[in-house]
Amino acid sequence: MMVSTVRYLGEVLRSGIRVTRANEARRGDFIEAVRQEHHAILTAVEAGAAEEARAAARRHSQHAASRLQDADDWTETEDLDAGP
Image (tube, rainbow, N blue to C red; front, side):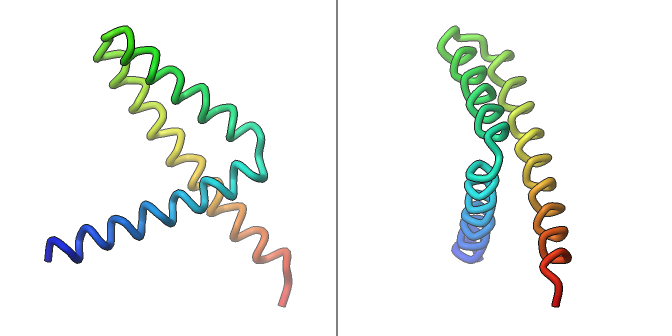
């Protein structure tokens, strides 16, 4: 059961990474947003500011989820625009 769970989580993670890379290739604003979010996490970690790092990581996760949702919406729209 554990192996199946880890395998499933790996597939979900790989899928998210593929979508993220496709978004970044298409949207420069995504790349810059991700870089800024990662920088905020790193800066807080280097400063030893655990609560700030935690908050920055939480914001990044929330924004990443929104970007993935936007990508899903874009993909559905593109599929509709492609026609039969």
